Length: 323
Length: 276
Image (cartoon, rainbow over all chains, first blue to last red):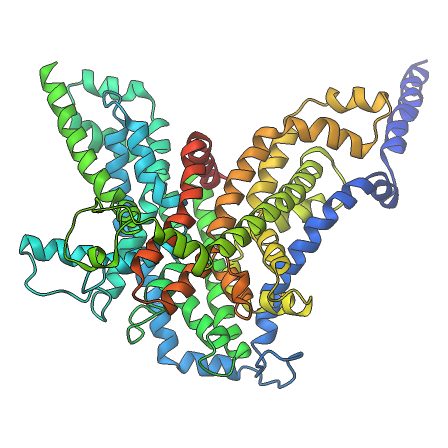
């Protein structure tokens, strides 16, 4: 009787357990056929992805192993020769250093400036903050290449507004060549700071608005004045936002091309040359026979560094968010 | 109370001063585009022209071919926006709503694009466009514009479609609607807010693009977009500042207008991009 009692449920259970398994277990092919529309929908995106993201990255490495001027397919295999030449080229290292210098200095200036603006605009008592926000954000949406050209006029040594203004105030006694060797990089950086600050101001504002209002009220009740509340409450709470947007800003700034190209084309005397203008010069400028293999080697090195930094940024960002 | 309004006044004065400084390059541009060359090169700092010289615009539009550049930019931007909406909505729909074999691979590929710096892999892209016979054609510009950087839009569509209730398509399927009808008649119309965000962002990105239009139109000046045309113009007419300023105004006013109209969406979209 006891065994029978035990046996019965197990007999009953078996088919129950097995039937759903049988239904659930479908062949992979059957699943693929059932979802055929999904694959049809994905096809255009996948084709574009392979053509304009995956292939270009892999081909950059492949092309970099050849001496090739762009006609037909590369045939003149040179192995690591292009890499050896680049790593010995002081102009590559100059462009490399300039790119990082540009990105770091630009980030160091624009983030505190953007934070200052955000703190002022975040005040509830201040009216019209959406108008100011639009004013500071407007440069972000404009064409960098066009902005760069307008700025070369404004910083022009002879009739530019900057020199005219400083001369009329008596702060200068003769015109300064702003896009000359010594100051060109700083001017390019300042122009990009002007263009990008609004974007980071908006990020800071989003960060500030995520801080609970009660914390400020509690601190105020405890007798903390405005500055103390800023220093001990607001800024520490903004730390995760700060880490995220600093890294985001750096990764973005390391891609600089448009502004340098139109303002200085990397000059004068390579003072503002960045990796993107260096690559452009060897492949497209027409100054010499195109050196696609050599340019590709520079691109492969730098894009790989950028990918590593971007992945590191993602991991760190995730880490910060989980804290 | 008085102390607060004093502070407030001070903040407004400072913000207006800094805001004027911030807007100065645009004000200079508009002002220069309406001045005579003599007035432009004079030492005067005044932003208000003595008389309005609209012929700067006529010269830029007709002689310097900004009319052609403008048309090219409009054609390329419009086509890219439409293609990108097609690509990202279909891809995002499938990723957001179905579990099919290989989905994780596709998602990994989409996320990986975020890390690929396409500006540094221009040589194979240039080479590919050349092999397709699209070098020096608007088709090449459109293809490259639509092919680069869309991961964010795919993720936007996918999370939007994932959030829609299951019953939506179930009743439609009972009524006999197929996969395409469900997508085109039910899902796509519901995703208007995402389509709007994608349109605004892609419009600005395409309008402002410089590197790819530059290298893809090196052999056909008539196909230049506004940024490239402007760059070529100052290279050829170094001293025509008033014409260049007019060209710059022609190029920038459309994006600035779009921004001012869609400001709120734009700013919230930018914030979403960094969180994504």
